[in-house]
Image 1 (spheres, rainbow, N blue to C red):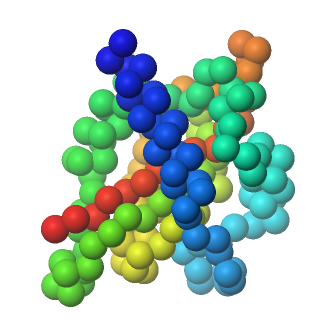
Image 2: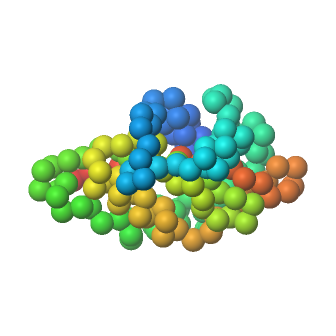
Length: 154
């Protein structure tokens, strides 16, 4: 029962973030939000533009140990950038990524930006993450999208 609340909360958080997130306006080689053609293709294939995102994934991807372990991982690894502390910059950065069939995180990018330093920190954390337990479709591991909000608050 306890985990159902977290799953529902995660689902509705994703929907909210998905609907209200900013889209990328330009892509450059130096950009933190850079996506390659292969990643663009993957996102188009497996990340539908509907609010019924999990309809095709009865079992979504899971961080090793579940939601609580994900929160502990984030708490232990996030380092608030000093320049943002000094300027009192706060907000929510959303990083979107694909979890492949083996649970590896691929194609991470900043979906909603606040400040370049906060964006960079959120991406750094995503790249530090261990492999997830992949999503299952009809009992078979499959690729899935995940949007992870990072709330930076002083």
